[in-house]
Length: 276
Image (cartoon, rainbow, N blue to C red; front, side, top):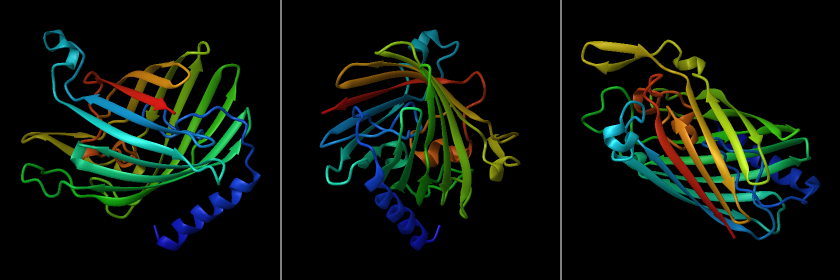
């Protein structure tokens, strides 16, 4: 995506902030992996801690359902910009390919039944050209442009996140895709949610190498989870067949040149958010 277009979208978001209604409890724009149309308000800030086990959970009781295995833990900070209502700035680091991201998240519409935001994120992977890698490119540097849209009513929220990724593990000319989610608020503190990451059209015919004699198609991604809320904390336990946490890892469809794990090979993870 050309820089003038990205800067133009950012300008549009900042201009729309002047019409934003600010009556809202602070909320970090994160469910399981997808960004939402919510955000921190006022002068609040938060930290987020993400943890993804890499060893499969199913039929793996001897290894504590994957808890004994390798994992990636990420840490991020979110800041509300007091002078611009609805504007959030985020920095995040995950050891998954030693990826560092910075993001600007602007809420455009905040009605009780409908919300819309614009998010522009820059990702940069430090690990480059591993000799053991045969399916994918490392060292990705690119931009994710997303527009989260959510509809709420009766304790249920639907979320759609149209996304443009300038580069992924196997695509160097950009990918347009979307993620979808559903959340049911069972009470003031309890929520159940699911997210779906369809395989982007650019990789639907891609055959990835599993071993020297086997190939398979890219899988669709998914995550399901339970969230517990207190006044200042959000704790989420989840199961997913997607190992990454950033937009280009989750929505690109071709994570590490392999994509999401196959049906029965899901893993466990959790998110912890503290809001100040």
